[in-house]
Image (cartoon, rainbow over all chains, first blue to last red; front, top):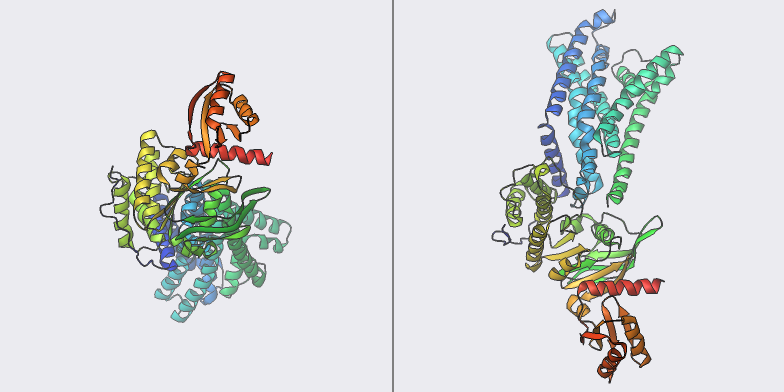
Length: 278
Length: 306
């Protein structure tokens, strides 16, 4: 064992700012995810499958919806692709569930916070790791679908570009929602399996009963309880298609409110966690 | 230079006052923070790092208010007591990652990581995953990550926890080397008093969130020159009582008899020994080990509390 300091001299080096430190967490986090077979498989299959099904849905939209015009509302069909719901849940569960839970399990959270960063920096970095991966399912397929539609001359380029812009906003909303909810669930437990189950519970545990109940008792306002149906209402309104049975402003408010609330609760939780781990 | 300065620092968790109205002024160098389990050592360190907000009072580390948080932590290297490493990273990966989070650029972080890993003696295993490391190697990685950004102040919380005697010696050698190198200060928290005694020149002793003693270790251990310590084989309590009756101020404790010096003390001691049939095994200047001092101070505090 070496216990001398032959090459190690104390030097006052100017340290890089907090932005660089956060970037280091993001870069390392993304690199780590892209080394995990489960994360690679889910991301690749999720992005490919949702893109392909969205394009297929676009082709068959006139069959599914008789009289469907080749205008902007055309894109409400791929936006409501059910595979988005499935793969976004899977990605959030496989990638996002462990982002904070793993750090709490290994107690590396203390190590992060003993560095010159704040809890906000840490959370922003974790969100910045998850959000681009989730957007591979929520935004990228919609953008590619609009591009393919324009290339195949199913719609004009003007409509395709407009659809891309709306897809960015609507897909971005869904990305933010799932990022915030997943990180919140991940911050609640040291076991990522529980957080992953929570993601599925939020999606399918709310969406399926809400849809069944709304149909059974003919009361569409129950659909507000389902984030997916809220998203569908906003997406339909965004693309100028027929509504999903609930008002889009209220649905948008619910999605945004839940996102902000989840982010705030995660922050509060993080502030409390370091007390417990001591 | 003052390393740490606190005024009325208090941290309350529910009904527990983990740190209670602590006012200390700790000079630079190698400082020991000692106290029994639950004395408030870890809470105190976490307050210094800005990981906890004080309930009351103020504290400055290296001249900066702990409320500043980030600028304070830029100058501190912290080695936590508990396991805190990311198991699926390699040793060198984790240390350079921590360097980058501390603000080093990628190249500097990597180059320093190799330096500090060589220093702590984890050269061969640096590319192995931390999950495969032994406890001793994990402790060394924890030490290395605290060193990578070359801070002014190192905070080591129980660095020898879980180590075998050889690992403990190695770790203490490393800590001693850091403490001796210029421009670096060490705050060593431990309940293993011999560890502190071999490394630190100044100690702060905490109990129940209070400071019960602080000062240069040599002075604290020497105690008062006006007092003698007497080791007696026999009934110590009776010995102390007889000395008191003879007009001497005497205390019997776990570390022997402590008697205030007065003319005629020596003859009184031997006279008492003769009466009780006891054997005087040592009589001399009151030099204690840190452990003896600690036990004495804690006992005194408990007596006061009772």
